[in-house]
Image 1 (tube, one colour):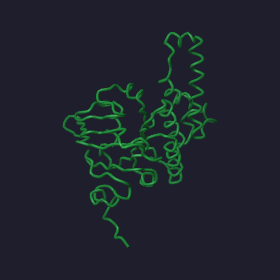
Image 2: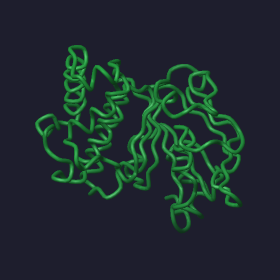
Image 3: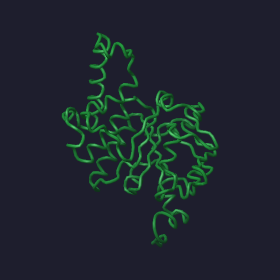
Length: 263
């Protein structure tokens, strides 16, 4: 999907995050335009997941500002950030193993629920109708990935690729405008990465703006509009995949070895 407009959709302004004496993110600035697919890469411990935790309000900023759709997000609680239109997946999945596939996705749907606690406890009419609506919405999200027939299965009975797609479906159930993915291709085969990449591209083609963290370069190369590279919490490069793979600093700290000689 092509970028829309020149104003930043998501913007990091000189963001830092320290845990005691450890600086996990150090004065990082970058922006994401509406309609882009931006990837963040870097070695383990570079600060990539910390960035997602700062965006979603899990951890407070030490310095700097984060803006989304022209609104300053610094200090907002996680539920407010979700209601603004940001949702995420987790590297370790965090699925509820004692809930069915569809119930896991319905957890995301409940951000749109309106029934009171009393209505839910007493199973009153509005609560029952709303529960059915949420069930239908969850199945709809699962159908994006061909998982609707496995809605009643338990997550641990499914292969890793499908469990990862359940996590994406749950994130989509909040009806986000910006989707954050934390190493979605980790543990997948080459063929599974290719399939997963195509599914993410299809979401983008239908209007979803995406920011993702990844180590699998085939996925980064295949779907990224731009790439941001971190090392020891600092941004060391930003550009297209072709540009960053020719960057000497990136080659030295992440992509391995020296650059190949051009023919």
